[in-house]
Structure formats: C-alpha cells, structure tokens
Length: 230
Image 1 (tube, rainbow, N blue to C red):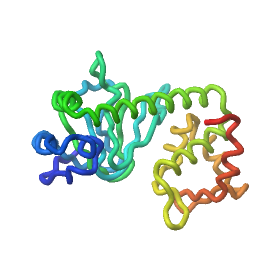
Image 2 (cartoon, one colour; image 1 turned 180 degrees about the vertical axis):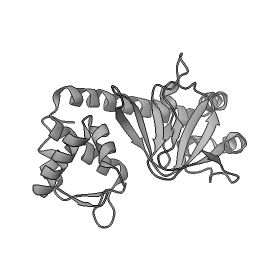
Image 3 (cartoon, one colour; image 1 turned 45 degrees about the vertical axis):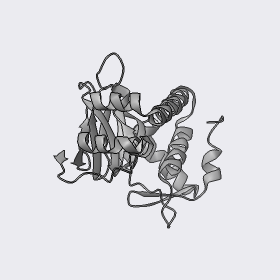
Image 4 (tube, rainbow, N blue to C red; image 1 turned 60 degrees about the vertical axis):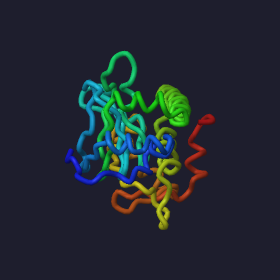
C-alpha cells in the first residue's frame, strides 16, 4: 500500500458521517490514507489488529481460508464502509483478510483512536451496533445457504446480493467488475461449478456477459432458485 500525502474529504466514511462535528479535527489528525492496487491485501488473516480501515474509494472483498488454497468471500465493502472490525474483541487478531478488487483508497485509524471515537460519538456507536447485528444475520444466512441451498441457488443469491449492494450501470450491468473465481468464492463453490451454472443462466436468458461485466436480465428467474426467504 502507498501512503498518500493528501487526505480524504472527512465526509465519506462511516466514522466521519456519524461523529460529532467537534470530533472531525481529531479524525483529521489521526487518519492515514493509503492507495491500494487491485489485488493487493490490506490486512491479512492472522495478523495483529493495529487499527480499523474505511473504504474511501473502490471496493474490497473480505475473505478467509477455506481448505487448502481456497477462499470463502464473506462480504464485499464499497465506498464509505468499514473493514477490519472483525478483529475487535479479546483476541486482537484479524480472523479474515481484506483485499482490493479494484484500485482502492482506504482511510486507516489506529485502534486506540477508534475506541476513543466509540466512547465519544454515540450516534456512531449506535450505527456500528446496528451494522454488527445486520452482519451477524447475513453471516447466519450464508451459513444456512452453504449447508442447505443447492449451488444454483447460491449463485443466484450471490448475484442478487451484488445487485443490491453495488446497483446497476445505465446499461443494466452489475456496477462492479468481478472475476468468475471471486463469484464462485462468494457463493461457496468451485470455479468449474460456477462457470457451468453461469452458462446455464446465460442459456436461460437470466443473465448476460460483456467481458467480466454481468447483466441481470431476469431477476424473477433468479429469485425462483431461492428455496426459502433469504
């Protein structure tokens, strides 16, 4: 990662949006901005937690090891989102990794300042609690899906989740360029299986491709693959 000489706008990330105005100068004094290349790791599973990151520009995948030489993508973080928070708690070790999936800028604050921010900024603390609750529900849903949902349904769920998080371009494509391997890792399956099922969806005219860009052509068709309320 490359440290930037210029800082962020002090408006975009979760901390800046929700902290008291009087706290903004403190954030400005304690933040550090980094430029991250596509494919570069921001923090690695097993590393000691030194602080918390916020995505200022770009997108990040949060993932962990899943067997030998495999990974499971737990979530994606876009502009304004917090990452690295899963390392909080008694054991200050990251249980996951964070990797940029496109050129990304992150804002880093050390752990001590982050904890001070929680004590001072009650709106930020409340919103973070809500975020943790939502993330826990999503994690439980994903565990259930891995155990009980057929792979074709998991691919459909992954595509619908990406549409909800990143939205669509004016041409109807997912507003994120994602490799088929990353999509497979997000759905908890192999590249070969994901490739086959994606081709099935193309034949069914549920989705279309333009390079790495994916167009969702028939949302209802994808939703029919979900055997229960997600």
